Length: 259
Ligand code: SF4
Image (cartoon, rainbow, N blue to C red; front, side):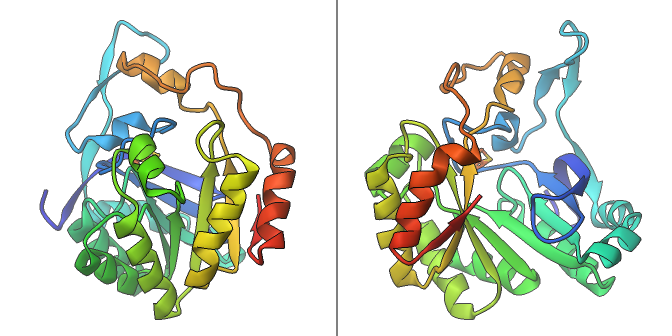
């Protein structure tokens, strides 16, 4: 992919959950992780995949297409009055927005030039050089920490957590706004011991606040449409009230947790 062209599988307008205010979320293809609970499994691969049409499963549709920086900026600017009114902006997500880092950086620069607030949702799994460039180009970094334990992180995401943690430390040291989130997944990282271990990992890095993302099953249908096996099939979703103890344990350790 060139720096001017990005492969995108969705552009969602009027999001209220991916940074402050009303936002447009740009979902980029490609991800180095393989999380068992991934709700956008087609995003993992950079290549265009065939997905069954939800309304007519006999029909196959491409899951993504290529966009120029200008096309994405034009689409995002349609909602500029909403960003201004609500303190919102544009969030790059995925997949992992840092896989297509040259395109992402160009897009962030172009949006900034138009006066649009930018955020990047990332796993932090990228080379420190790439991470540093994207960090410098965005107004807000949103980093998901998936497991406190290196071996469990490898087991459930397919990769080590050393690089994401190193990049998280860099982002915190840079002093810009960073939102740390924990996807809380049943049987993976949701025990009281996990809550304490997360706090003991994050607190020394200077993390004072985390957002908890309760496990949901919104992605299940996508596995069916891809004809892929889903490792979390039948696992009950969590709700904010299920995380009360988890939240309190983090709070007790000096890390304010909210959902
Ligand atoms: S990091 Fe996100 S996009 Fe990548 S596999 Fe995990 S949940 Fe899916």
